[in-house]
Amino acid sequence: MLAPTLIIGLGGNGSKIVAQVAKNTNEEQQRYIRFVAFDTDANDLNDLRDHHFIGKTVQTSKKMTVGEYLENDRHARENWFPVNRILCRKALSEGAGQVRAISRLALDTAIHSGAITPLHEAIDELYRLTGHAVGQAMRVIIVSSLAGGTGSGLLLPVALYTRNYLVSHYQQNSAIVRGFFVMPEVFYHVIHGETERNNLRSNAYATLRELDAFMMKGDGTLEEKYKDLAYEVPRIGSDEYETYDVLPYDFCFLFDGQNLSGRKLTSFSEYMEHAANCIYAQSVSVMSARSNSSEDNVVRSLCAGGGRNRYCGAGSSRLYYPNKDVNNYIAIRWASEGVSEDWLKIDRAYE
Image (cartoon, rainbow, N blue to C red; front, side):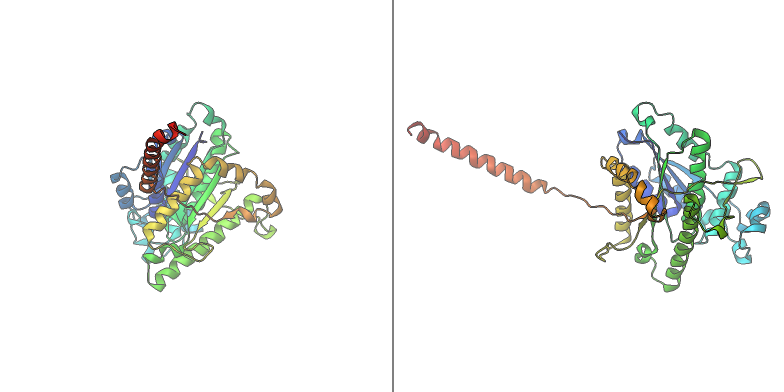
């Protein structure tokens, strides 16, 4: 029996991976799973809907420029957003343009206005489940690339917000939150310019450094000199902000372009399919129970490592059965045994 499971896709590629996971599920599995896709790009969300995405969608952007956002968000303008004339002319509905700060700006406004209600609805639906599954801790999987702007800018605040929502609304302190993050090398199949690749690497480095700081804060291992580190999140329907003192992720799976043997896949689409297969196998398939049990048993090693071993790799394999060959073998063996028995019947009668 599946535990109640929430799978969230962030940005264009994160949402496409989640959509593929959704396609791989059957009706029985879908009773215990909810899917949510976040994006600033309205075109990508429309494409998901056109391809019959069975989950909920959250468009964090409006038909406004960055400058118009900043006019309405004094807190961002004065405290953390890197104000720039060129950025101020950008329209958010076309995406974050690989600028993480733009993605966070859009999310803050979406939270203020209550636009992330579909996330609340997905969680609430899972808690209306009846039967054995309700007795299990909820599993949350957040999928994103580390290379772009939208997903990289959302993966920390969405995790903090979701965890806090589970604690404050359902007293759900035992929820397991996993992150599945696609590293920059995967995108080298579709992004060839070195300048653009450097932008991907810079985004990934900054995102991981920021995430790691809050992971250590959640584990209580952050250095004393950084004790004031905080992530301010808006309150819905209010101009006030609050900070969440929660661990963003229990485990972070980093999905790179090559395996331990240094081998790679041949195309970007293969990587996207492989990522979806990894998430499905780990979180949805019949093997997920064993994966959950393995994670539950690493508490001692987490303590010994001071939480530094919350980072993992991920991979999957597929077993193909040669149906045609197996059918031929069975047919030939059946014919051989049948013919042999018929021909020997008279001989055996006179033995």
